Picture 1 (cartoon, rainbow, N blue to C red):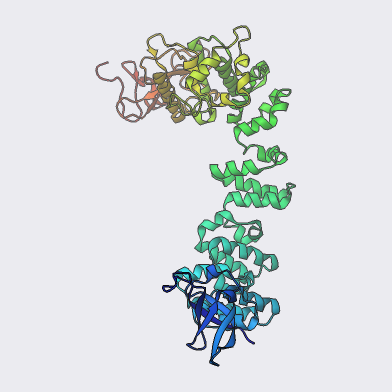
Picture 2 (cartoon, rainbow, N blue to C red; picture 1 turned 135 degrees about the vertical axis):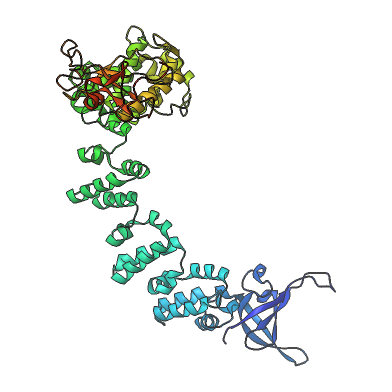
Length: 554
């Protein structure tokens, strides 16, 4: 006896004569138009699944009633998805009616693959034919149901895969082969799905052609993983090349996945975030301050000073053995961080000199110069800092006593210049004007811009030393207003007249400012070279660009 296939015409429902639920129904056969009766007791699966048009398999039996009339009835009824008879499965799978083949097709493929009754290539070709019978919405679920062997065998099927599924299949394929055709196919697929390139697995990244189009962070991750944290020289060189060209976001990610032993390598260390640098070297810094200091980036040096003051370390050795620029940095930070009471003009002079040492690039002084346009910084307020600084010990002259609770959260790293000025109630008072913090910050920014635009001019042309200046000279609140500079090596007696301008001695009383007429930079050394001894007009240095001297009305 062979099992047959049909669809449920109807089952159950309410009997209009008895008022009770029906316990029978009818099935329409595929091979003929006869309807077969079945009873509830003949159902093998749950009767809840026997909705109208449900595809089922069953046996047919002959029934003779008491009058001798012969009829046919179905029994052992089950959903087609549960069918195990190979002939029935094949009959349905090869049908052109979607309702009959779709529920059973995946099982048909699996049986064929398991029993090797049909080649995978032939099965893949059959899948393509079936796809053409489906709607767009049906195609997605159909592709999801196919065995992986079909994907592995058919490029045409792989083209239709959803991206994540395609990547999974490609990864399996390259475990077996990295033939040129496969590599070219993967490369073409990724070019058509660029968003996938950011999520490639290690199996694909080992292919040079695929590795080359991957983002920097994936390349770095692959190198680190493939090396098992023991990089060869060539791998280390590749990693450094990646770090050199990575974006800030990529760099931060790569650094975050680097093992600590790699982070500590000198060739990698310079790329680390400032706080990471400080964390790595901190134990050594406390005992070998000078040599470790020299290995830190400019930003990391600032962070190390924050932490050094927080932990009450003695930094006097840095003020003696560091180079001049670093001494300026240490001197300013100690004034700002550690001294409970400090003359504003001394602090101001130290800050101006510090900005000169970084050529006006205040980003090198992060986090001192961060979010200066906001009175609040991230999740820390000025009230927080005021409360902390109020506990500064005047005996020790440091922040240790008030920072003990902050050491675990590194909140002190978030304090910027504005926070310190306000929290320490520093009176910003010049001989001619008193400023609030906002105006003072604008003045400092103006000074930084001036230095950045004139970094080379601020050096003595005789010895290359950065020239000094008088920080008290401040006439207006929103401009830097420092225009006269001199080399610290200059001897005022020997530099009398113009000898400090013409290169015969160290530069002295050099005037640098913007021309009031054309906005070009006026440098008295250039004016002397251009105009000779008549480089001034009514006491004003003449501009070499437009010739303007004294401004009318002055």
